[in-house]
Image (cartoon, rainbow, N blue to C red; front, side, top):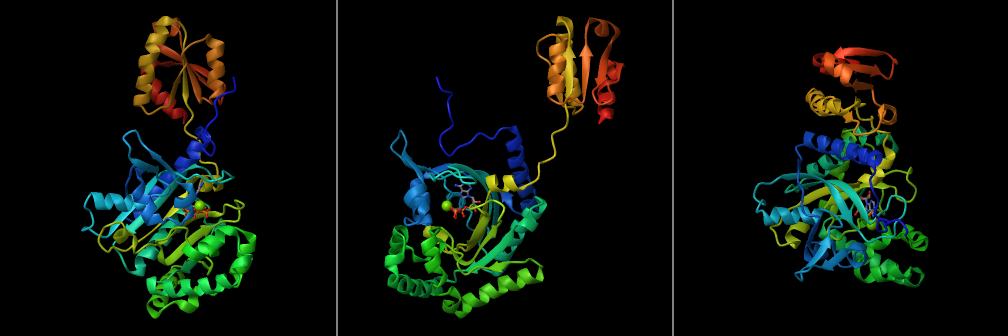
Amino acid sequence: MPALQPARGTQDLLPEMARRHRRVSETARATAALYGFAEIATPIFEFTEVFARPIGEHTDIVAKEMYTFTDRGGEEVTLRPENTAGVVRAVLSNGRTQSTPLKFFYSGPMFRYERPQKGRFRQFHQIGVELLGVAQPQADIEVIVLGRRILAALGIADRIVLELNTLGDPESRTAYRDALVAYFSARASELSEDSRRRLERNPLRILDSKDPGDQRIALEAPDFAAYLNDASRDFFARVRDALDRLGIAYRLNPRLVRGLDYYTHTVFEFVTSDLGAQGTVLAGGRYDGLVELMGGPSMPGVGWAAGIERLAMLIAEPPPPPRPIALVPIGEAAEARALILAEQLRDAELVVDLGYSGNLARRMRRADRIGARAAVLLGDDELAKGIATVRDFDTGEQREVLLDDLPARLKALG
Ligand code: ATP
Ligand code: MG
């Protein structure tokens, strides 16, 4: 019988990779805390309507990528494809709209039915932040700076470029949309089928197309800059000035749009060329209309999400966990005593691996395999004398140690 396989697009995080993921999420959590962002955890599934309307029915996510099903009670639910809508839903459900600004950090699995490739999975993980209730560009700047500090803390900032664009306010966006429709309509026959569909519903997304033919046509498309009204132009200038003053380099990318419908003003991505086609590690922007769209008050917001799998591939090997002490009892009496001794050593915060069974040679082989710092041998003779034999694997030395002294002596090994 063939061995059971994980579902397509999912993967097991074996300990080495799990450690990389944890390094990413813990670094991000600690850095976000420096900016006063508190962790929030929302359910990994929601009523489908939580995502469908906010994300937009014509986006790839809603049209093709959602894991939606009817549960046993007949409810339409969806595994979350992203977390902004869930966070906003949580703010509304818990009546937290009065105490703005709200600053949240999250980390967890997301689900999208996509074609799996390197750096693209059906279950993947994101860290992200949301800053709600601040209309000023200071909020855009702070979340970008926070993103950058996380990349720096992970040791990868110099391999990643910040790309920046603005989608303007709704008035500018409408004017630009009309210009794009006019431009692309004239060349509709050259567009991919997907983009011909986008032309009707979501023309900005054509700029984001991955089809090489579309990309060629998009190169000549009108620039948003020409359609920005004064307020939108001023907003963007303030974001850029602040980044300049903070010494944060960026590249303006007029083709940068976001996959989701609710973005306004600032959009940004942190991009690397070290991961092939899946080069965006962190992406976000301002979403001033979202809260209202979801039935809340008018409340601006800005945030980003980053793919943990992609970041985990970029970072250096995290430091290994502390080496364990292998406790090797020989004989029944020693085994009984070893259970208690192991707990005493753990009280002293030593990592202890207890040999459960097998003869001495077998247990020593295991101690070697797990990279133990030392082995503590406990037999009838040792028990009678109230000692243990400690073998230091680094020096090869072996000596007898009083059981009472054991925690201190093992700690001293380092
Ligand atoms: P793409 O254009 O690559 O599909 P997207 O616009 O759908 O990206 P976002 O919704 O902005 O991506 O998600 C933010 C980040 O989450 C991405 O930049 C990426 O790092 C990560 N991400 C998104 N989808 C996946 C996936 N299927 N597998 C792994 N990581 C992903
Ligand atoms: Mg996508």
